[in-house]
Image 1 (cartoon, helix red, strand yellow):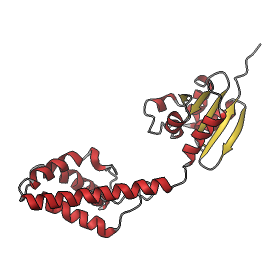
Image 2: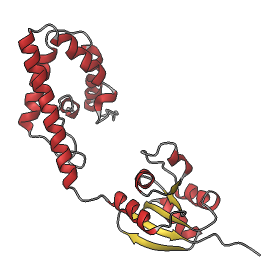
Image 3: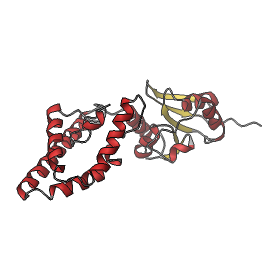
Image 4: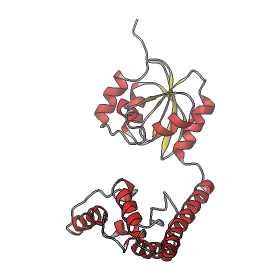
Amino acid sequence: HLAALANLSFAGRYPASLFPPMPALLVAVALVLLVVAVSRSARFSAAVLLPIALAIAFGLAGRAVYFPMRFESVVAVPLALWGGHALGRWTPAVRGAVAAALMGIGVASILVGVIDHLRRPLDPYREAALLVRRAAPPDATVVASGYCYLETLMNARRRVVPFAPGQGRHPGWREHVTAEEAMHLAESNLPPGEFFFVGEAMAPEWHAVRRRRPTQVLIANPHVVVARVRAKATLH
């Protein structure tokens, strides 16, 4: 319930899947510096502290409440205003030292994250998109669903159709459909001709495509599947 407090520092404690966790000592130092930075003024403090206090209070009361891990959507702007207003009341030497230390911690955290990501192997979604770029002809239609849609759109260099259609409105989100809805969409919204499909292996979209059309699986693992989907049969 107190995890929201950790993300107020430039060295926030994020899940290791996103960024390598910074040492606890660095996070503690960043928080102390932040308190020093804002201690000379209370202006804008309510806009920062009230959302955090409410999130903690709801958590302690046993009620789930959304507090963005990337907290900038809630408190970053008032926090910057609070810090800027308060730092102006310090002497120039203290103001420069605190601001430089905070920015230095931020830069160090960013560099550690960048280096970590450069060393990581490709995730399955990116691998699937790159496979489609290699395997699909330039004029091929590619249908992608779920989180695979954004990766495919950005990396496959092909015309990409979202499935379900709502995925195209928010390509970085996950458009959730039921198994029944996926079956209906597979019947009415998929291209009639041959296309390549990229999607999550356990998602209802892939199961619906597989049941509605002949498919040739190119790769499949616990995360994603890439398949060539045959043209829709026509009645004569």
